[in-house]
Image (cartoon, rainbow, N blue to C red; front, side, top):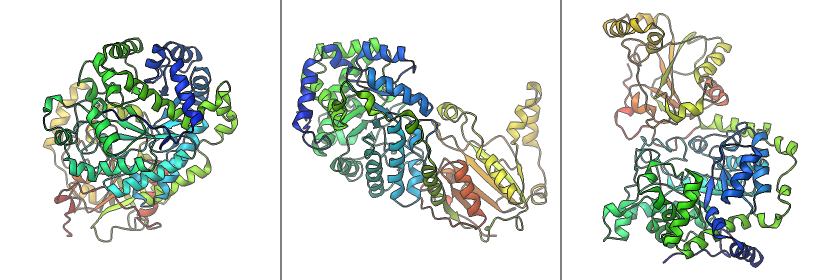
Length: 596
C-alpha cells in the first residue's frame, strides 16, 4: 500500500484554499508538465536565455545550482522564480552556513565543528545565518542538515560534515538547525536516508551499504528520522545506500539480489520511512549520477522506479531530453503509476504552498527584497562574530599526555618548525579547495608576530619533484640511503608542530606519508624534541600518528580557527571543545604515550 500525503498535517499544515490551488494546478497540467515537475535541475549557465529555455522546454519543479557570488545568484534566482510558469523550489547546500548558497557567504563551520562547541545554540545560529543569506538571494530550500552517524571513522562522505556519533546530539542539533533556517522560509531536506557513516566506501563511486539490524537501525537512524518527522521536517534526501539486513527482516522471502538502494526502494521509503516512522513530507533523490544509483539498473528504468519507490523529486538530469522521455515512457508502461505520480506532485506543490509561493502569482518579483538590501545581509559582522565564536569554542585538545608542553611562547620555544602533513591531493576536494592559502602560512604569520622564528619544512618529496626528471631516481635512492644526526633537529628547533591538512573531499581521507627517512616529514622524533600535532579538516588523523603525546582537532584551517588555535597554544585561551566523535578511532595504540 502506498502511503499518500495528507496536506492538512505536518509538515504541510495547509488550509483548504492552498489544497484547492494544488489540485487545480495538477488538473490543469499537461502530461509533459507533470513529468517535468518531477525533476530538480542543476543549470549549466546563468544567462537568462539558457534559464528561460530550460524552464519553457522541460517544466522543471526545482533547481539546485552551482554556487557563485551573491550578486550572480540573486540575478539568477530572480530569473528562475519570475520566468517559470509555476513557482520554483530553489535549493542550496547550506551544510556549514551561508557559504553553501553564495561563495561570499558566511561559513560558520562544518557540522562536526559546530557540535564540538558543545552548545546547541550554535547549530541554531548556523541555520539562522544560512537561512538569512540564502533567502536574501532567493533560495527557499536547502539540502541540510546532514543527520548521518559517524560510526566508521574511515567513511569518506560525512567524516567531517555531520554532527558526530551521538544520536541524542544529532537530534538536538538538527532540530536547532531546522528552527534557525525555517524562520527564513526555507525548507530543509535532511540527508542521507537511511543513514551514512557506517560503511567506508563512497556511494558516488560504488555501492555502499548500511549493515545494521532493524533493532539497531530503529534505535539510531529510526529515532533520528522519526523525531525530526515529529518536529515537522519538510524534506528528506534519499541516499543511494542499501539497508539489506533491515529489508530482509521486513521481507524474509526477498533475495539479496533483489534489494535496491533507498532511492529506488519502496520498502525503505514507503513502508519504513512513511509507514513505520510516520513521515509525511517530501523526498528527493541524492544526485542521480552517483554509481550507487546508476549501477543498480539501466537509467531508462531507474528514473520511473525512483518516483514509484517514493521519491517525489529526481535530482539532476543526465541528458534532459533523454531523461524526460524515459520518465514519460516509464509512466506509459505502468512502472510509474498514476497514483504515485499525482502523490509526488501533491507533495512538491505542497512544499511550494507551505512557503506561500502560490500567493504571489503574477508578482513573484515581490518575493525578493531590493538587491542592495539583500547584499547587505551577506557575511555581516554579526555573522562573522558567530563564526569566530564557533572557531574559538570548537578547538579540541584530544590527547594531552605530554607534560608541560604548554604554553607555547617565544621564551620557551624561540625556534619552531612547521611541518605540513597531507593526504591524497587530487579529486573533487582539491578542485574545490583551489589555490587557497595553506593553514601553515596563516600559522607562520601569527607565530612570527608573537616573536617566534618559524621555518616551514619543504618536504623531501617536494624538493625532489623540482629536480630534472633524470636526477630524481638517484635523489630518491639517496633519501633511503642517507641518515643524519638527531642533533640536526634538536640544535636548530625548540618545538615541532605537525599541521595535518588532509583533503576533506577525497575518497580516502588518510595521511599519505612521503618517501622520506630521518627527516621531519614523518614524526619519528616525538621523544627527541617537543612536538604538537594539529589537524585541520580531518578529525581522525590520530590513527596515523598514534605515537604523539599532544593532539589537537581544529576542524578547519580558516584564519579565525588558526588564530584561535595559536591563542590556545600560548595559554591565552582555554581548550573548551568536546569531540563529538571518537577521535581515537577505536584503536588502543592511539591512547599510548610513554613519558620519558
